[in-house]
Image (cartoon, rainbow, N blue to C red; front, side, top):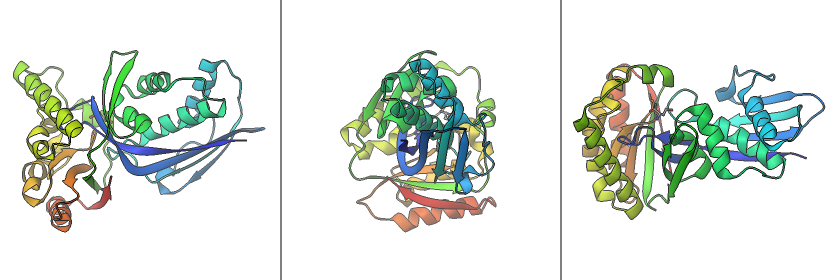
Length: 291
Ligand code: HSE
């Protein structure tokens, strides 16, 4: 008999928390796994089109790494997958596939590996803990990684916090969006981000939505990535006048994310603003309201 797991999408960074803050989003992928006589894949939905359907599939490879770690031998698998998470848009689709594979494979053999071990294995594949941490633990997470081991703290999101994402129709690879980053930054920019990340983390933990707008500012990655997502700087600078608590590039982009006080209304105004700014740069985007 098999297992089925549902894994949330995630947004990384939340502005200042580059590679260290993440949040799970109510957009999901599913993976189903069971032992089989020979390996077979069932991929459903547009978001999985073109993925390999043999033993080079990431989900198969990751599952085998769990079995190897646990000393179990299950070479042939029947794997079914479905995903609502758009690919290469900064919504953690690859992290969710990795976490789904790890979690499903571990559950299939009676969960011998701890969540912390699964996290370390996931980060080893992703090289930053923010997306995989959020997909594995849910909620808002703050994470550190020393190259081998990740430590993670989960924060329960404030009740009224809602998320609006504007997903441009073009794809942007994480590697391309990391190539534009400087290898070194000034001490003052580092201090700026440490301070803003600290305030943002504390504000989210304490439900201080009034501090989010001032806290979600960043000097480590968004200014360098701005040319890759035309319209982004205008959105980051002006969205608070249209009802956003704070705005950020979601992960490595191109998706833009606004945190919103669900009790404050103004939903349509904000949505319209994001769509209009992107449209003025010839970018069509679709919006989703998530928790
Ligand atoms: N923290 C990462 C980045 C997330 O911004 O490059 C990308 O998946």
